[in-house]
Each structure stands twice: as C-alpha cells, then as structure tokens.
Image (cartoon, rainbow, N blue to C red; front, side, top):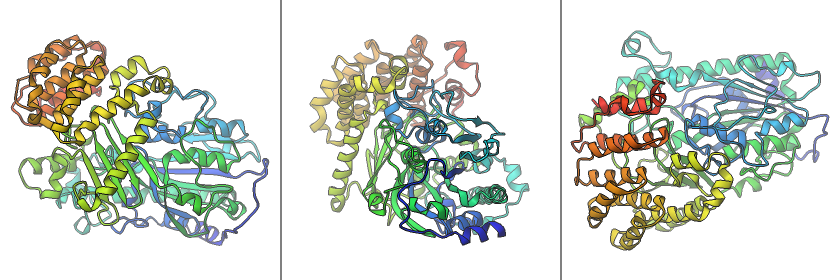
Length: 620
C-alpha cells in the first residue's frame, strides 16, 4: 500500500475549478462495494470498529460521507434502488427475494445503459441481484471475469467491483469451528452493541466479522494497486460503499441504523476537483441516499438525469454543501425478507428517526430460516426463552410499538423509544406526517398484498400504483387508525370491516389485531369473515385476530384456506400469519402436510413454503 498511499497523498483538490468537463475527456468511475457492511464495523466511523488501512488512506484524500443511508436493509432491494435511482415501494422492487421480476418504469433504463450509450465501457464484477428485468444494453460485461481492461484505448469506463468476503454467509460457522479456529481479533476484548448478550458466541461472531472486514481491506488494496500500476488512479473517481447495512443479529433485514447506515468514501482526483463539494480529507455530515447514487454518476459523466428517477446528485457541477444541507429527509423501507413478511417504514431528519411498524404485534424475531443459520441468532433466541436477557436485549423478541422515535445523537443503537415523550411530541407528529405524505405520494405499493400485486400489477407497477393511488391512500388511513385510542377509531374500523374493497377489510382486521381484546366488539364480525369472506387473505387475517385474542383454535380453518389457495405467494402470506401465532406461544398446534400444496411450489428445498413448513411442523 505504500505506492498507493504516496500517490493518493499527493493529490490536491482545487476549488473552484472549471464549470464542466469535455465530452471526450471524461472521468473513469470505479465502485468498490463490500457486502453486508454497515458503518458500525469500521474504525473510521465507529470506535468499536476495526482498522481498515486501505479505506482510511482513501479517506485522507477523499470525502468521507458520514450519513449515507440505504432505502432498504437487504441486498436485492438495495441493489435495485441503486441501479434504478427509484424508491422500491413505488416501482415494485421492495420484496426480497422477488416472486417475479418487475419491469423498469416506462421511460427509464438502468443507469449504466445511459453511460454505455454515451461512450462509457460499463462492467460489473459480478453480483447483480436485481428485482428488475435487466435490459440488454446495461453492461458491456457482467460476470466474475468482467474487467474495465477490455475497453477500447482511451475509452472511459464505469466499473463495479464487488467484494463478498464480508457477506453474511461467512458467519455460518459451526460450534466445532468456533472452538477450533482462532480469530485474528481478540475474542475477549470486543465491544458489543448494547442489545446483544455478552457471550463468547457473540464475541466470536464479532471477531470473525472484523476478520472478514480486514480481509476485504486487503482485497481492496490489491485492486487499487493494480489500478495504480496502470496509471489510472489520477484518472478515476473512486467510490467505496457497503451494499446495505450490517449482518449481525438485528441489522440486515431490519430498518434500524445497523441495517441502513453504510460507509461511503469518494476519492476525486485533482483533474476533476471542481466536481467535489469539499476538499481532500473532508467529512460531510449531511444525509445522502442510495437513490442518489445513479443520478450522481450520470451527473459526474455529464449525462442528463431522467425525470423518472427519484434521486438527486450529490456530486458534480453546481453541487455545493448548501445543496446537500437541504436534503433533510431520508425514507427507508422493510418488507418481505425471504419468507419473513413485515411492513415497516422510517423517516430520518437530522438527529431524529421515526419508525412506523404497520404490523406492530409481530416481533422482530419472526422466524427466518437463513438468519438462524448463524449461531449467534440461535443463542440469542434461546437466552430469551430461558429468561436470561436484560430489558434492552429482550426488546427484539417482543411486540413492537406502533411508532418509535429515536434520538440518534444520544441513542445511536435505537433502544430508547421517545414516541411517548411529551417533550418530543411535536417532533413525533412532524415526522409522522412527513412519512404519511411520502407514502401516499409514491404511492406505496406494499399496502396492497404482494399476491394481489403480482396478479394485477406486475406488468407495469408504476402505472398500477397510479391507478390504485386513491385506494392505497385509504388503506394507509385505515392502517393509521391504530395510532389512535380504540374508541376514537371504532367507527372507522367497523366501516373498513364492512367495506366492498377486500383490502380495506384486510387492513381493518390488521388494525383489530393491533388492539387485541380491546376490539372485542368485532369478534362476531371477524368470525363471519373467517368463514365466508370471498378473499382468502382476508379470512387468514380474521383467523389471526381471533386466535391472538383466544377466541378460536384456527388450525383446521387455516388448513382449509391453504387447500383453496391457487398462489404460492398467497400461501406464503398465510403461512406467515401461522408462524406468528406459533411463535406467540398461545397453545396452537399446526401440522401441515406438504402434499397440501402444488408440487411445483415445494420442489425447491429453499422455497418460502418449504421453509415455513419446516418451522411450523417442527417449531422446537
């Protein structure tokens, strides 16, 4: 790294500079991407993190963005945001993993296609993982062999190099491996997040993850040294970032900062210093967002930004610190994560972050097969079942508040909910309103169940959303009835339960589940819906509400519903309700034969249905 450090150290930013770059003299642009890496694991950002000398060197001559936020805490959704520049819940890419691929919005292409048409050589090595149909003109190369080196002489390039060594799968070690394989980082002197129990398993998991980050840093060094040998460092704008937040329990898949807050370092050579809003070694605390990456790259390359993109550039001509300071709000989303189905939204403004849990009765630990391959996950749940966790550590296993408000400056790990604080009431109401307005303006497609979206909206999600905009606004209003005392909401809930629209009835029942036995006046109506509603998902939600309140044993009725479903996506949603009831510990016994389902839905041992059946038939 000595050669790299000396070259980077010699680069000087000059501000102000020329007002533009010539078309035939454009910067190369390089993205270095580590997987499953929140800012919390890097010493550059967080005191508990590990030293990563390559990135620390890059930061000394680059710009360190302190608040780059993903709009989703999992790879396929986050990468779909990056490649499109769009909010996922507006264009139908919010589910991980996709049931079906969605098309790009009309009039919009994946952003590398615009670079390619403008003469850039576009390459990706190698992870894509989009929830979107990829056009034929996005990449010149996208594979494990893809390289910018294959471009024509003098041709500018845009290259993405992914580093998977920090991915979640690296933490799927066994107990035997934990005992036999030592980590480079000291297991006994690890600082843990306050919501994690201080056990050897957790300390070893942290140490192992830090080891993987250091290995990633070495791989980054090797790649940059190759760039240096080719005399490309002073000709290339370099971005380093994580593809979404971290992978320790309560991060990946969750809308907390550990799942959303990623590192971002941008190195801009002297030749293009006029494209930077600040000088070498600087830090920018203003919010930047994943939806801004695509328009930023286009702007740096001198390409017009399509109107269909939701993001705005944060680097390039005429972008100043004042412009960045105006980006106050960042919205994020968490939906289905493999077979685990939830609906959570957040908005952050300055030091405060508001989280809205639309199915708050679900605990964060609703079972997900892939997560629980990690020993730390398993141990955390076991310790909770044994009553060995403190109040902070056990929050993850409890029903959540409908609203959460966190002061990230004083509570960076989001463990002290201020939603009930009179002192913060104005902040709560302000952020609540901003989130409501944002979701209605998109409109947010997730308020219509995924199975219905796949059936009716998959061919053109944006157009479908516009057709359903009035209905979605109404569904959000019904969901938000749970923000009020039951007696205040009662008349509106009754109206929803008797609505012609099945999705109004659906959300009316979810609201009843929030109130639980407070909503006892609706037991009889829910029993009628469980028996006779023409929409199976509505029946399932009625059963969920009644079982949660101890009114029925729903096992046989759920089986009857599953027998009648003609959609694997719908079956997964029903099984998600059953999984919640199983975990709620209210004495239910679900035994579900796999023969109940269309054989094509269960051929893949990793399918959502198979994973749910494995848990429900063997919950211990």
